[in-house]
Image (cartoon, rainbow, N blue to C red; front, side, top):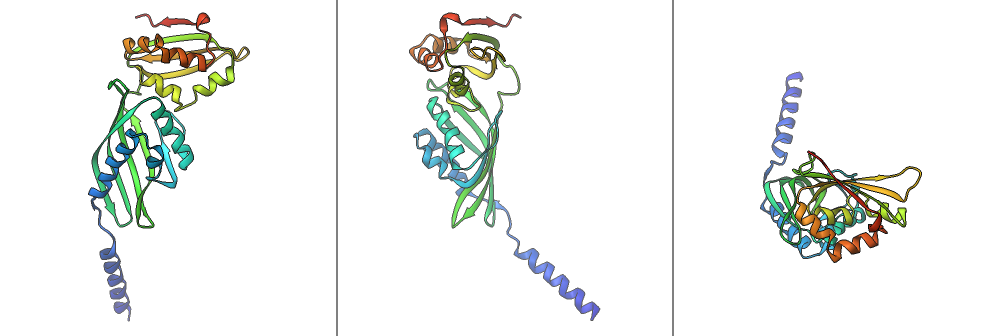
Length: 240
């Protein structure tokens, strides 16, 4: 009886092991990456969000984790508002049963075609009601490891500190706009007692593009929207 019991256990293990789904390449998931790019570049943010599960998690670089359709939509709307377009390259797309993953690289381009950001990503997918939905999306920049250009400080007074601070929240449209015009990263400062006194520490990788933006109608409109007093602005450049 003891031997028969061990045989039974062995057969169960073999059967379960044989029934486990095997990971395999998935052209379908790879194609969904191309679809993400097409929808985003067409300005179809709702279409992009539809590729994610309702409780999906987005883990952007230098920002908090975002959960759910509304938070993900707001993040991508910020990128789109800055005029950025994206290209995804799939390195690996695999599925095993109802679970899958994709690994690849991405590039974000400014309206003039210049590279605003590039990096890598990994996604997890799950088949839900017969459709593949992204459940986790993490990406990080190759350009955000540290200062890569010229450091600048812009100190200014603002008319409405709350409006200004809201414009510079993580992953905001204003940050994406600066990123699209030569700024690799931005850090935000505010006087603890006089909140109208504010400042930005900018890592500028394309000084020509950044100055052109500041002198443009678009740059003036951004300053006005943020209630910045340009006449009281002081700009300092890093000294070698």
